[in-house]
Length: 181
Image 1 (cartoon, helix red, strand yellow):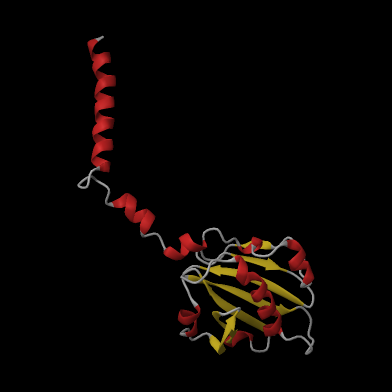
Image 2: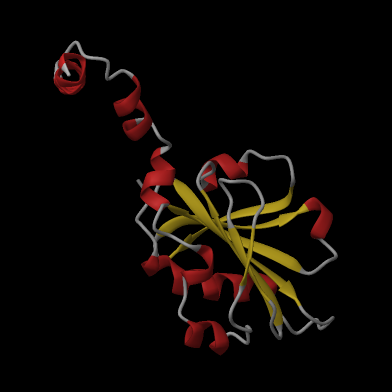
């Protein structure tokens, strides 16, 4: 019985000591705050942004897009949502590792033109592999990352300006995401 009485007391005393050491300045807190405060700031700032929820269904339908969108899992820092539609299909991407400025430095662009999206730094960009595919990207800064709207023409009509469509959609998304940090 003595052993049983001491075990709970020892456990409580051990828990108290661990708790006190974690709260003290010299306690073993090296990893806990680092994980919280050193997590990618973009992840934290953009954590509430979900690509398939950046615009309400009625707004998406007004652009000729079918709802719901289909979440796509690419890289963990670039979740996306695909929407089929007419006259364009659209992919909305949240990128927590790139900004417009860092994207400009990539060698993948056939064209990269700086613009603003409702006053935010942005760009229209066409990748080298899609110059004939009628695909245009509009990027704009959000948090410490960026939002990318990729518009691809559904048919083969020269009457559609994919960059104008992508910009129109980006301008509707912009008020729904965090300001650039």
